[in-house]
Image 1 (cartoon, helix red, strand yellow):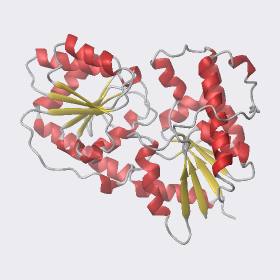
Image 2 (spheres, helix red, strand yellow; image 1 turned 180 degrees about the vertical axis):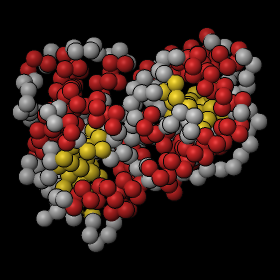
Image 3 (cartoon, one colour; image 1 turned 60 degrees about the vertical axis):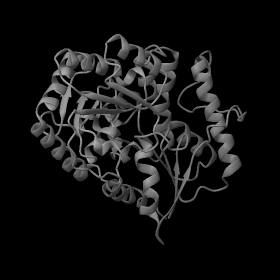
Image 4 (cartoon, helix red, strand yellow; image 1 turned 135 degrees about the horizontal axis):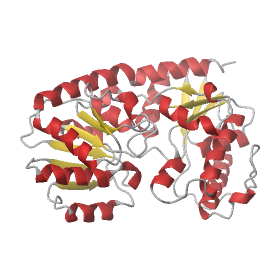
Length: 374
């Protein structure tokens, strides 16, 4: 069976699709399976000119928005690139972004299409202050879910929470299947170590949706209480300068290290002690599973798919989003008590291996793919 994994841009960022899809290929290398990855190069801009329409809604009222216009142009570019580079995609397409799925079905309507919705672009735009709730852009982006539902042969997502999020925007939410992201355990190697000063780490795109402003305020509170720590921030994004200024304003710039984008953070994450990410939204939160497999204690928020991974007090700690005081208290618990920290980390690693292994996800996908075999 020849499979095509249709991505958006090349899988370069930590987390999400990049955590799973590139590592699946070798699991499908056999006489029975063949897998190819396809994506839109980032250099492709404003090439597509094809007129595209949607079956379930009229896009015309939304075209006054520059954000919608840009989205539509990227859709046309993906169609242009696909027609240029691909004659036949194989027996089955598995798309991992709405643009990829809609473009593939537009060009190859006869090929079965499975679509995984990994995250909500509109939710991030809302939290980052780029669009307004129920505004043109929000209504356009949420309309795409029903369009996908009408086109695909199977609709998937990555968590119970995100299926609930999608429910108001589709006709049959009960038909959405859930296959969480899987992680190749061989990439993550916990390393026994003793850090005299607790090392905190977060890995994410630097945008308001990730709540790093809350993390910095919580860390300032820890410093005021006399706790020693170092906070390592891996990732880049539009909020970086603002976050650096906030760290200086709070008096914790010396304790905070901004690394920028790093391609393979899993290679050195095991040397840290505590993974913390106070997200305001998270469809699944792949970085929590990666940190757990690396042997770190976890501190997260009660949003999205994070509580599906973390049982508070058992394999990590949970706090409400936008509550720096509660976050500081949770960090204080794991900083002040190394034994508690170790137990949380051990439990987190065990649970991640049991529930989020790449082997488990691959086996679930193979069963799904075989339903479409001739």
